[in-house]
Figure 1 (tube, rainbow, N blue to C red):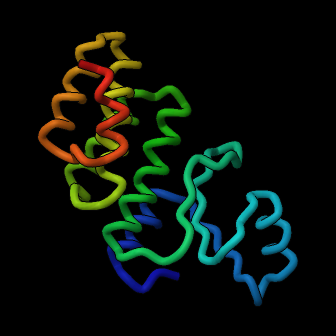
Figure 2 (cartoon, one colour):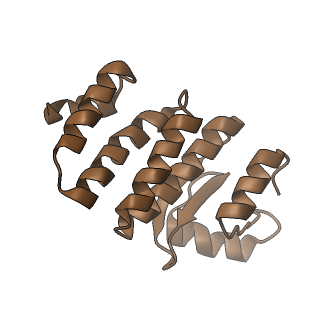
Length: 149
């Protein structure tokens, strides 16, 4: 399904992939695209165990950007389950492994929120704001974190 081995390995190790082809599986494509409001192909959805969407990637992306987006979906799923330690770990892995992608700033923000949710310690938010002064300072995520001074 994925020609890049890093993507294929990540997908097979982390997810249960389901592929529905727009032309070859018209009925299933129609059913799922209506259910999940998929307007364009490719649309990659990260769903939780209940079939609820946690993240979506629309269109083609370079490998690093794609992997970071899928990883973001897994982190969001952990956060939604209230497994804040796992969510923080996953978000921090995105910042470390995919630091130059669009997902990294969002992951840094949510890593701080996850740590705060797990501990109730507001210093986690302040530390995240400080980290934004060093990295990703020109992003919307830095602006959102700026109230945590």
